[in-house]
Amino acid sequence: MASLLGLHHGFNSCAGAEVHLKQDGSYDVRLLKLSLRKKLIQIDGKKRYSGTSAKITDFVLDEPLAVTLMGKGVLIKKTARLEVASAQTLQHLFPTLKLDEFYVQHFPAGAHSFVAIVRREIADAVMAVFKKQGAEVLMLSLGPFATDQVIPQLNSYGDTLKFDGHQVVLNEAKEWIDYSYAAGTNAGFPLKIDIETIPEEFLLAYAAAFQLILHDRLDVVEVEADAIKDRLIGLSAKLKFKQYGMAMVFFFFILLMLNFFLLTGYNSSNEELMSKAGRQSYIFENRAKLEQDVKEKEALVKKLGWNKSYKYAFLCDQIGASMPKDVTLDELHINPLIGSRIGLIKEAPLELGSMKIKGQTGSVYAINGWIYELKQKNWVKDVQLEKYTADDQRETQMFTILLKY
Image (cartoon, rainbow, N blue to C red):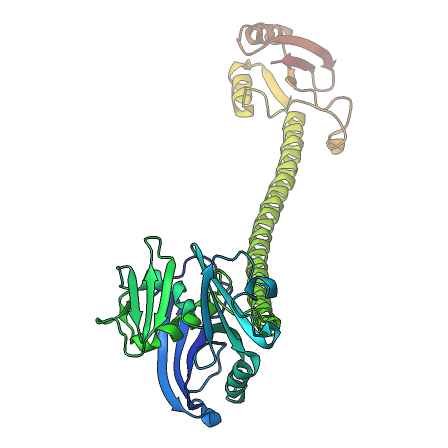
């Protein structure tokens, strides 16, 4: 069926009815339903009814309805093109009629205008019958002129369109040149809307429904009646409000979801950054603590003299190996305390890079020779005899040597 492109603000379903008014007062009704699905207009059902107005149709109608009237009481006149259809411009066509008692429809086509009228009480009676069935008429047309909306969809390519008694003569631009009605006139071949075959007696009902479902984008062919237009405008406004309302709800829902996901993402990133910051703070604190520990240990090592290049075992071995036989070693202090007792080691500074050697000997020559030998060693910077005294009771000499390394 017909394809609908772009954004649609009209109805998603509607019905069209051709009501042919017969001479005996009965109705011949052709009713057709259309729906819009996935931008395609499709026929959902059709029904034909003939009889009195007591029950015009038992076809359930809960959609917007467009009606086009034909037959008894509908007058159609052709004239030169009119720019405006008013009581003054139409008076020459219907000189004996009071046009304010009629519904008037003006259909301009090329160089001509086709004017159709019907008495208000006749059309109102038809609309009242549909209203009893629960269907509000939102568009009223007269004659076959609503068919102009669907001519591009038909498989009719000549200059004459025939269907269900109607005969329309068209020019190359598909503009109406002439129109006539003769019962029994038919197309002579199956009519198709795009690729779907449609019985020709339902073509006018289809055209009425088609221009109603697309009323927001077509120049509709309808009578000039404010009351009917107001009903259509009111229902369209409600529908648009509902559509826009749903669109706004959907928009804000999507916006809320986006905000939720963004907030969740930012919270995750923030937690990750806080975790990284915590780890970095912990590392920094530990680093500062380690640096402080290292400094304290370096100070302690320096204080104890352990940061020198010579090991204490090496120094002791060198002293023992060079000591003369005539010398008895009493004390050997490596990095001795400066001016303090041993019990005050935590408070007293050390004399780093030095050794204090105390002992006794029976010959001063042995001490002098030892001092000379020590000075020859490459790890010794200086050697001095700090103290040398005689011990008469023990018949020996006491000495103290200070060595720098």
